[in-house]
Length: 143
Image (cartoon, rainbow, N blue to C red):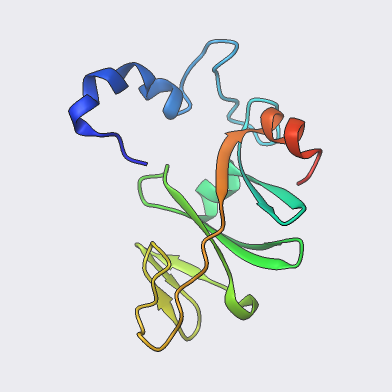
């Protein structure tokens, strides 16, 4: 989510935390993968949970994977902070170019809306960014 510019001054003190730049013992972020203070994106579908490495998402921009039996895609926006997760219809592989999600035959905008009126929109999947230690505490050692 983007900050409301009306409250820019109030948000200012949170900027380092939101960017992962805090250095305090409690609020710092580890830049390495799968450390307690590393960021992950967690997804739960039904009774199955899976965490995705934030560093891999930053590197690739898009991850095609699955959570349990559900094929999903996880995509990172150009701002390097916003991300979206959707079910992948028919297990199709997606690519990301600018703000367009594409398969070999279909294209969707960043909100998962099909750019072809005869193709259904993508189904959203709830995804959460949090520290790895927090995710594994509440979801077990699910990777």
